[in-house]
Amino acid sequence: MNMEKNEEKKDAGGHWILRNIIGAIAFFLILWLVCTLALNALTHHGKSIEVPDFTNMTLSEARRTAHNSNLKIEVVDSIFIRRMERGAVYSQNPKVGSKVKKGRIINLTINAMSPKLVSMPNLVGYSMRQAKAELNARGLTLGKLLYVDDIATNNVIRQLYHNRQIKPGKKIESGSEIDLEVGLNPDNNLTYIPDLMNKKYLRAVDDVHESSLNISRLVFDSSVKDYADTLNAQVYKQVPGKSSEAVLMGSEITLYLSVDPNKVTLKENKAE
Image (cartoon, rainbow, N blue to C red; front, side, top):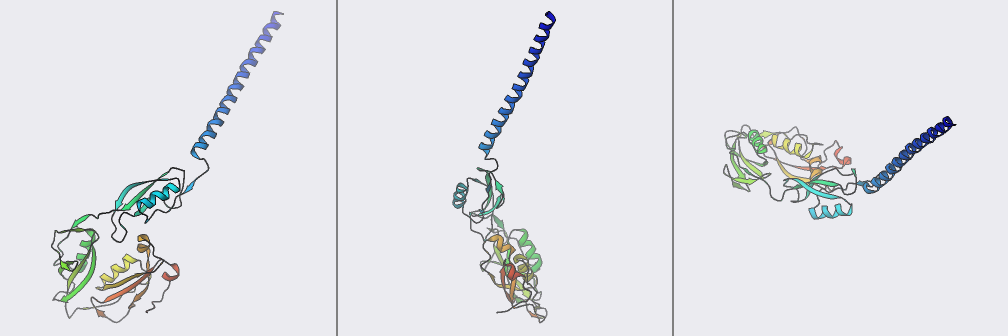
């Protein structure tokens, strides 16, 4: 009898331990499920927001757009681009169209309100190509090439800013255009118009200057909406077009540019 009672006690104890183990497992499973559901609700699990395009917006416009999209913005950097509205958004991270959660901070780089000042270098005596490289290194750009009679073709005689001679060391805004008065020897005063078709904006302008020519006009069509488009725009027409006949150095070219693929793939140069 005692042995049977002992066995019953052992069975009862074993069942109690088993029930406790099962209960503990069930408790933790329920707790895990509740926590998961709560976390999903708090983080909007499975729900995402598409990042809008903030580029070219003012900060007030960007804040309003971010608020309407349940996002936040933060300005983390600035650059200066002369052809872009000051204070406007230049770039963003995450990029346009990215999927993010509600409340995500979008980091913005804006176009500075005030450009950096740089010192004007002394370019007198440089060749045109050397002077152009020096301007680029200082954050300045080459404007017009003004040719005057001289013994040395493309030798810099004067440097001009807003049609006035500028002294070396003077502080000016980065991105400013500097015109160069350069020499032109009557025995070495001809050049050729290059083929600029389908070349991007900056490359085309650079090739014009490398050929000792000037830009008369830059005409961007309606497909070019912002500075990024400007950089990506390609030449779809040039006037005059490429020619095997030599022209006088300093002659001018008008460039027509677009980001419309239907235009930039044209191979023929159609003059007006």
